[in-house]
Length: 618
Ligand code: M6R
Image: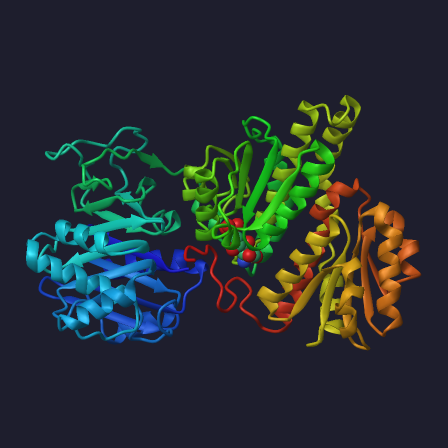
């Protein structure tokens, strides 16, 4: 989704802005722009398309100055055009604004401002903010007050950075439901837990001649590891030598700085051609790390309500089966965007379990808040430290996946599933739902998991051959039963999002209730057959689709190969393991298959069209 970078002092703004935006570009965007103060004016350069296009524009029409803001835009209001790209300015171009999020009352504000004589130049909601700030600046002659009044008028989610010719040595930032971090220049107060140094206002950590603002930490790592995370409702003023932060009640507050320890390299591709490939290969190590990590500290609930989106929703569907089978705990799984608007029945005694790699997914965050209001305890399974969901949850299980950059999640999904499996086993043991012997044998099986994953991940060549031979644009079905059903859903989602091949996933038993009407010669069916107790049933479903002309690829445990060879056209085997571990193994070749199809089709694997890494708007 959109990226924000702001810089004040220390060096030429443009290279830092472009560099910062580049580090955020994995989130997905379709236009980019910068605004730089050159000592007299704010100069804007912006364009639809890539950062490379912006760089070309800047080399033809350079801008210089050490104060600037930059943005990569993922279109919501208005098409991805030059004109709709950020930054946006007021009529006199004395104020420039970049914005992530959505202003929900944009229409009303636009009409009101138009009635007051404002002429709009774009279709964006962000332009409204620039005009609002200008209007209030005229009234108050103070940018902080003007921004405060503007955000009081806004309904919706925002991370905003504002610069003005009238206060050229300051950048202002404000956030609500969309992340924003401030970077303090390197070398100053590194590692301190308290504010770095107090200035005259009582709340001004001293900077070293440069300050930064960004929508995510990776943008800042080349410049500093000392960061402050703004909280919802905060307004911040960043100057060359100080930062001042006001909370939602406009009181100056102390926000602790943190030292970021993770390495930029962890967020680089290394020898891999794509982030997705690197992240697929990292899965066994990520699993090993998670197996060593501390487990969630939370009282065992009577009932669990999962809220999640996309792949995290699929992980939750697997979690539901783990909780039932291994811990005897009932649960429901809700798509977060639906849950937040459903009837507000009480959730007393329930645990809301929010599953989110980024910890910033707007729908999941809103659903978790909604569940809390309805009386649930909120627990989150999250990868990104200090993300909004992690901060608002009562307890967190960290995924320990390391930075995930590719838009299509791989290690994020498998660590979510493994975290849920560990929690289910722990609760099952504590509730004595599992016998002591079963718990011991599970501990043994989990120890073997990273090695089993390495085996399951291996066959790139086979995936490439299959992709070449069988995935011409045709109907592709993924089917499975039990734990194979959500894995099938994840396989279909991976194929769709990175290769643009339509695919549908069904519980195999559902085929007869409608979808089998689509089966004919040339349809490809990928049948997940890893759940041994359900194998005879799935084999019957394979025969039904084969009888109607489908080509069937079956995935099964090695020990079932012979049985599947009689039913399917092609069989891929996975290591033998307990059925409950199979989602963690079966998804690996499905990810690889989607990846190979995407490469063959020349798709942008890491940044598929129309998608964003963290979906911070509704
Ligand atoms: O960061 P989250 O886990 O909350 O993200 C949820 C979904 O947006 C995400 O899983 C999405 O479906 C991925 N593109 C799937 O690969």
